[in-house]
Amino acid sequence: MDCKNIEDILIFYALNEISGAEKEEVQKHLNKCETCNSIYNNLKADLNIIDEEKVTVINENFTANIMSEIENISSEKMKKNNIIKMFQPLAAAAGIILILTIGILTGNMIAADSTQNITNTENEIYYFNDLQQENAEFFLLNE
Ligand SMILES: [Zn+2]
Image (cartoon, rainbow, N blue to C red):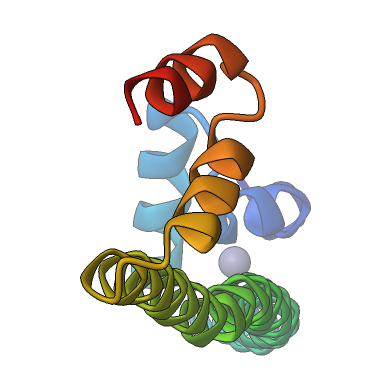
């Protein structure tokens, strides 16, 4: 191979897109031909710059994509967490209200029982047994 042939395939050699036999030919030529060697070095330097730019561009996009994805995921999580955090006190408050209501009702019933306020007790029991009036009537008959 002469210099002209080498120059033609030097780019493929630099890109490592060349057959093994051709690669050896180019390597041999570069070892003995300073002109082609310097062309190759310049070519390789240019390719490295292009590669670096390519890598940088890819990295920038990649990083930006990853970052925005992370932001999306974390903001989604934040939303979910916020909703859970918003509902946790509500659930706790509802639980407390429920306990207090049961406590007050139970307390009222005990108070009604202890003061023998039969009318109130009957009314309350009738109210609680609204859907089971037979029980209420049964209770009233027993009285
Ligand atoms: Zn040469």
